[in-house]
Length: 341
Image (cartoon, one colour):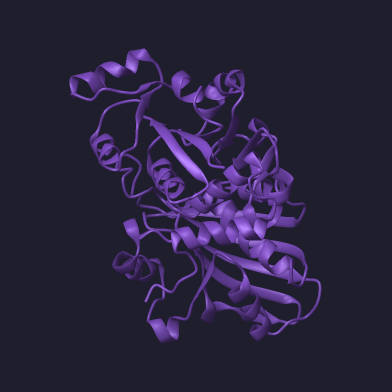
């Protein structure tokens, strides 16, 4: 059985999710929704994606460019089982009544408020809770990164408390109107940042986060401190992380990679769009003191949530009940958990 999937929004996340869906043998990408014509429309057409528009009004810019669209969002919704909303933050809520009226299952992104969906979703943490639900919200890039480390370690040892400092990129590479900034900006200037609350929308854990934004566009970096249920060694932590899906360890001494620029440069040689959907943990930074673990991790904000969107489709549509099988299937199709060299 192939699940028919539609995508509303073809920006930084949407285009990556669309290509990931096309790689799945149990899914069919029926079409994508674009609000206005630009270069990415031609790229999508070159990959045989069918183009839809939100309403008849937006079709004019496409017609002026010589592009005949397949129809409107309503037409797309009539032909799919699942709609993935990858529109800008807050816009998905405007479309929710339309999705609900069409009786399609809905996947939203972390820019939406948690009450937009029945469950906030992270593949490693609560896949089973999303089975058969009408809607799910794939949490943000930073929250996804935090949840991977927390749930990965918690499944083997048990996590009592989390404290994290989030160093956020100022803007995505294409967001020229937003950055880079000339400041280390408290974002926000209070604790906790929203990331802790977002983590708690998926799992109940004692967590406090603070965040700053800095002048870079490449990745986010977290310094995470985990208080565990029992004492461990550094070797124990490395073994746990090596066995956890979607976590990539980078040994700085061996690789020469000591920051985000090195990760991206290595990815440029072997990955499409230099994407790194894995959570990258700097192995050398892991410090263990009894039951306390500290480490640095990096998050490629443009791609880390892509595999979670694919898993969310399977969970909502109930075409795979076992989270480990879905994760393995997605990861194999996307070539994850491979070294960058």
